[in-house]
Length: 195
Image 1 (cartoon, one colour):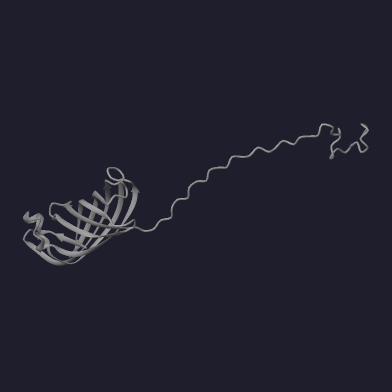
Image 2: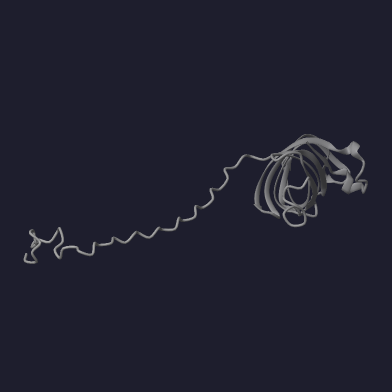
């Protein structure tokens, strides 16, 4: 679930939750290193009641679509264990949203916390400030909370250690072996020393 607020940055009252517009977010995260995830997220707000149109006093009631791509810098794997219960992080990247034929670009900055419930399920809370790239556009905030489900992955097979080669045992010839060998075309058949 996500809640978008345009009036907070305009009025300076960021805790006035009556102006938050609810919606839904879905995203995909990719593990890169112990300290970095990449994510792609999409939000849909069915009715943004306080969407600024042309000024801080001109608002629209409209639906809103928001997409962003983020780099998520984690503390787990560096300051905390990889499987710790909590996982604080910060995120940034770029994003855009569209409402009433307005396409607005922004740079997001987010603070979040992920709580590990099990090996494959986590709960995440996040607050994101979206800095508009154009002066005529408007900053806004999005607060979200939801579940993260880890997809199963095949473990990488461990490389097999090469087995040491056993030396072949040397064939010992009998001391009184005949001079001729079995595959010798001129073998001494009667063993009198003359082929």
